[in-house]
Length: 125
Image (cartoon, rainbow, N blue to C red; front, side, top):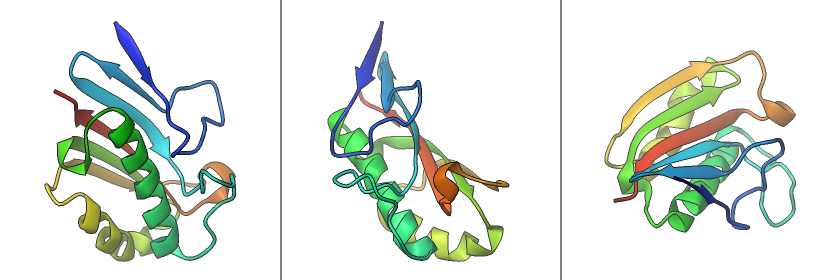
């Protein structure tokens, strides 16, 4: 049975998808971009500012599902520019301290022309 995860502390879905789905003891969270949930605006600034907001949005979904960053087993990170890789990593490692498995790729373009997007799979026990 699928259980939808939804919180106002993360941006609402901007398409036909859920913020997250729990199946069994696993959360599959949709990719989060740096939208400020309270305003719907993109966090303006460099990759540091945008990565912080995107990862905080992920955290809100994790919290709603009853878990945290330490429960993440896999992340997929999308960057608009691979030149931002080291700076993105500096933000990422502050939150994902358990060092989950990860893929990180550069893509041609992200929704709303943001600089990064982060999705996670987490254990919810």
